[in-house]
Length: 139
Image (cartoon, rainbow, N blue to C red; front, side, top):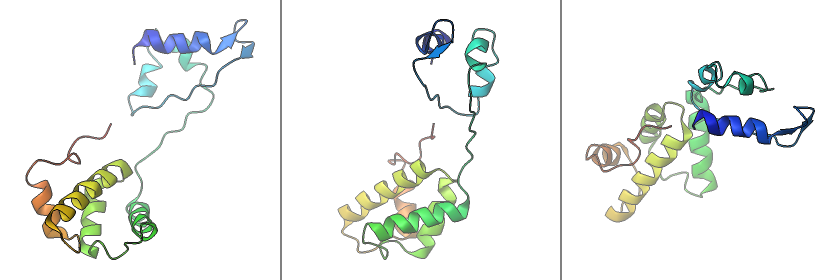
């Protein structure tokens, strides 16, 4: 987002020179965002941030728990082989969006090929062809 737009958020968020807050804004970004608030044109906005929550990628265990919970809730705990689950968790690197995108690509491919279970072989054939959206950078 352009610095000018970010400063407009600051101006729209308060009345009477910051004495009355009109708007609460949540700004989210990657690890470069805190550095932007130290730039001269955004220092006044950065100084108004009350809470800074830096989020890290999910752990391997948490990502696996999420995958297993999702499959169970979908009524398909048996859908993926344990080897595929491990492979997906490893390739997702703690990013649930990447994990979900890979899962969608695999499910679509399995439905197209009428496969009863998703496995590592399907993963390799799906993602080695470069047609997947999961290979895109998250951001």
